[in-house]
Length: 310
Ligand SMILES: NC(=O)c1ccc[n+]([C@@H]2O[C@H](COP(=O)([O-])OP(=O)(O)OC[C@H]3O[C@@H](n4cnc5c(N)ncnc54)[C@H](O)[C@@H]3O)[C@@H](O)[C@H]2O)c1
Image (cartoon, rainbow, N blue to C red; front, side, top):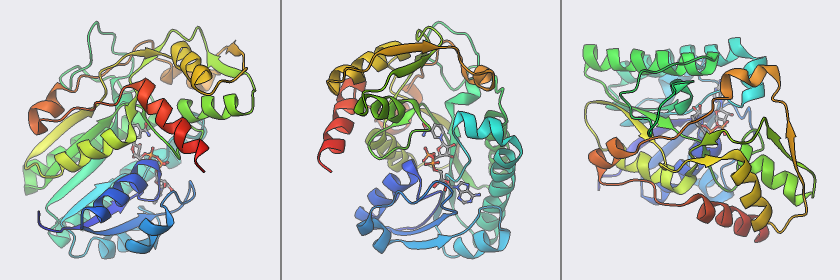
């Protein structure tokens, strides 16, 4: 396969760093732009093999220069984490809207062929459904984060219509794996069990989510980057797990004596506390012949093994 020049915004983050590593290993030339808001998750080896630019996606000149000679841009820079977004709705929107505008403008000027955009399953909001969410379900974004993600999906689609830019918006469903930080529920539960502190579950713990392992997420990104046209695609594992079962599974894997404590969800989490969320990966499979395969049990075991090999 032809080696490509690839720009990844947010490439020092959890998903971006894993994607950077894979792209470098596959022989591509990778440039990362990241403000390091969340620190640097690139391992030393990958860091030494990418061109790293510390900067903000809201800086139009910087993005314009970084996109020079690029074939593909993975646009992953974002402010995320329920509490952080709730406390910083304006910055969240700014980074999404201004950042994406800069990426699109840089793609136009530099003749970039494709943008791969990190959207979110949060867009589905409280859509109450019986079966796994397909991309055709009416979306219901409630938070500044989800609203901005949906806005960008539409904005990017309009650029496909007007300028022929190839676009894939990736609707990620709870990506998890080693080296994630505790803004997310899986690493938070691991951290609590490792300290034998109570595992704090919001509400009844019966709310469900669909957890997608990081390697599967990266594989899906790689397969989709060869598509032409404009697509919105769920990156989901199609397995519905309630948060209480997740807590019990992590407790078992880590042999922890932590108790499970049920606490009321803080008010700022209301819009995030949807009862059910599970995604269909049929569209991904139809487009690429691939669907995420790692079960939650296997993924949690891989995190445990990685944490204990350090
Ligand atoms: N992790 C998930 O479960 C999940 C779910 C849905 C969507 N997503 C989306 O996937 C993408 C990657 O998420 P992640 O889990 O790797 O998060 P992350 O926070 O680990 O990575 C985001 C990166 O963006 C960088 N960043 C933030 N603001 C920036 C700015 N103004 N300029 C430049 N860089 C900036 C951060 O420093 C960080 O390295 C995000 O767009 C996120 O919204 C993630």
